[in-house]
Length: 66
Image 1 (tube, helix red, strand yellow):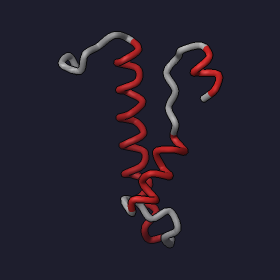
Image 2 (tube, one colour):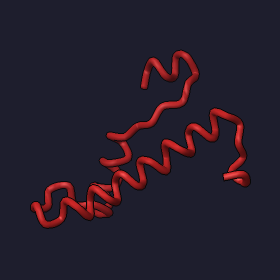
Image 3 (tube, one colour):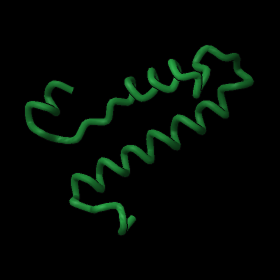
Image 4 (cartoon, helix red, strand yellow):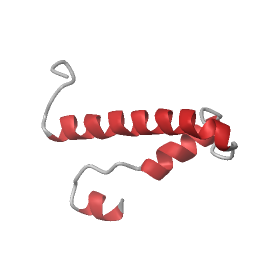
């Protein structure tokens, strides 16, 4: 994060996102094996979407073209 700020480049704070989701109860990171597939699907989908948004922002896309 510090290096990204120093060079003014996009940074995906995956840990921060997951911490926010866990704190808000959106995902249960301490659940048993039976919850893992649903948690993984949610996390990967949301992280992928945020990463796509960062790439779009860096490319100068305004969202209307996505």
